[in-house]
Length: 354
Ligand SMILES: [Zn+2]
Image (cartoon, rainbow, N blue to C red; front, side):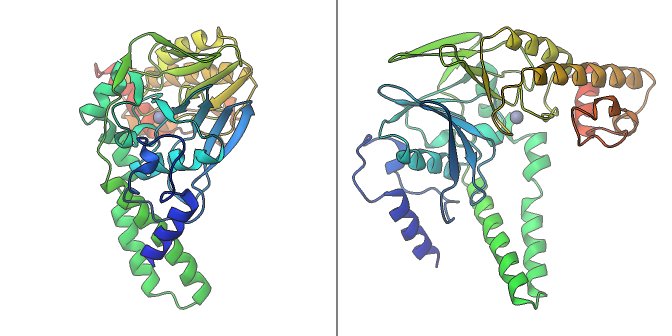
């Protein structure tokens, strides 16, 4: 069945057919482990002409959202996603949008769901990220606490589901559970095949690419969601791709620098753009969301600092911190208590961590 599925995928992705775009991009290489899925892995929303927001369809774990920027002669992708399989899928599937080759990939930051597909790119593709992003990917930082929090439990979840399936008698329920099991095993296969790989091109402050009539700015405004968040700004098209530095809701804060993040967002506010293409959530235009996030983070930081001074543990502090003043802007807030990992991170920095 696996072989049949892979054959079907090859037909879909035209991996046996001559590739007009190029003969050395990853689309021509064999499918990486973790490519056992049906249907497209990505959907592409064209936000302005030639600039797409790339989102997973649910058939394959792809991690973050990304962006596809089609230039006069080539393509720039933002993010390599969560595995070599996911990275390969996006390269194959953009054939529906363009026949131009991928020549640039930008990692907005080091997190596994954004950058763990880097290994599929040959040396002549510029994989670009901040110096900190390279450091974290090369030295194991992308497999650290945050990775373990999200994915460390996957093997145990697979084992538990396998055990549960044995006891399911209803055929429909069993088929559904088996589909989930196949998805999770494929996810694990993609993880097992992942070798975190740093960008081959780095920046510390800014870099500008001129591709045909496009000016593409890669900008670092200071630490925020991580120590090396890069945004991709197209000033003429008035689009900014923000990774997890700015998302429509509340971003993950477990590797962040909350107090500096507020200031970094202030710099972001100074840029000219109409559209934000985030690493999670849908594209949006409402600039007020930047202020909402700054307000939230200032408040969270202040409460965490006060409770740290009182000597509370991070778990106690996380349970006590009350962000209900922000509930109108963030409907998931239904009472006191915040993400423990966000508070752990604030405490870690207060205790001299980096
Ligand atoms: Zn992230």
